[in-house]
Length: 632
Image 1: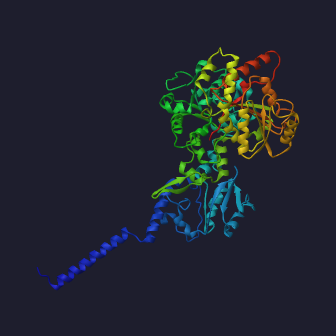
Image 2: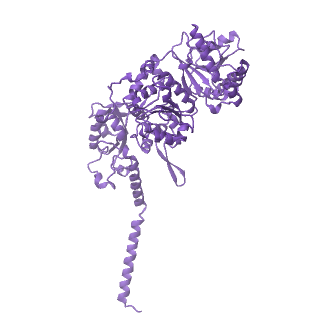
Image 3: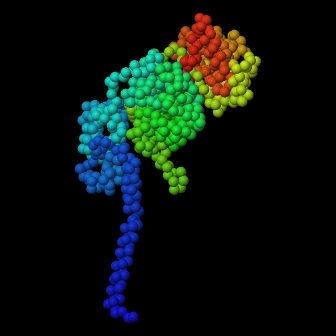
């Protein structure tokens, strides 16, 4: 088939037209490097906004722009974006300085921004302004926050990211403040026996919880009676029982004993200690269970629909993805009142607090937003094509502490309430069972009520090596706190092991036992009392329990028990005597499944006899607080 020259030219022009159309189509689908970067940036920022919407200011726009700045409605690729969002960096080229706002007290916010003269002139408009010459930052009263953010628009080339919405509601939006500072609390609703036991700072903790509808974390220092405060709060809300108490397995019996002791108005048949997968409960008003059993029997507890919940040692829930937290979340879903207890709430790693706080305050930050603001959240590459978020850091710690104390956390240290504390505080520290060696023969002998003195003496001798590893582990943790203390033991093996741990740490100490003559004894006492470098006194219970004062320490630890309560009281009085200016903490390290179980009963019965005979030694171990060895 032949074509005329005109037809050939026509087809050639059509081919050129089709080729140009294809090139144009390819260019639109495969943009150049600059277009690709812009498109990728916009997509990433759009995605980040979905995570960070809670981080943007809830009030007026937090941005400031020159008059030539285009409006967000015409420039933004998405109506959900605004210059206030942390992710909107494609607007940032027009800003010369950028900053952020954080709370530095309950009434003041601070602007973290580099030097900019126009911003400084703007700050002088506010009566509550204050310039910190050390930090070189400006702060203002929170009452002026809305005005500050609104008028900031007039300052050219400045971008400041405001407070997150949740923080804004807590500190700025007074109309949404749900906590009444003047609320009246009827303490008569609490069992009279428990009410009479409470110290003023413990009443403050209960008041804090009740003004927050019984949803809080009590994070007091060890020895300040968190258990009593939790029971008082729960009893205040007894109309909303059944009450579920979840604790480490080693503390479940302690809770049972405290309920019987401080809540006598609760009938014994209304209390259930859930002991295993075959256990059950029906109409009981209080159920006590360990974390591990709660995980195994989760469905049983979900069906009960508990309205009041106590979570002891709540730092056990610090892992956001653990089975423990998942089980607790399901059980706590319909709970009206929830009290968390922890003397170590992981404030050094804010991320470990997140799962615990969400149990109390479900409207709290979303996890990613919390990680960005308070955990220095950042992306890191774990494999060639895999990137994950790392929340192990710390950022805005002052604001976080203020926020938590405002919303749901109350924490008091011993130094803050010294004038309210008793002069002597006794504590039982249950040693980690994984570090204690027990034998089936020893356990059978302990259960046999016909055991004789020789058998008990043998068990006492055997308990030294059984407890050694756990005791040394505990001493090692104490040494990290760099606090003067004295520690008593009976067996030479325990004394030697303690000294070995101290020497490995490079810490100076003195030792007084049966081999120390009188002259050396006084020299070592004087050295401990006078030297700042001597941190520990290692003492024998029998040969070092009288005749000298070690009042430079306010912590006295007993690595082992002894069957004579008089000897223990004498040993305690090495620190608890004239010249002591601080409340004294006495700790007894207890290993379950060893002779300690029998010695405790023996000591208590002997002490009761002495009291009845008129020789009160002030040695009531039944009132001691029970703690667990911290292995985290």
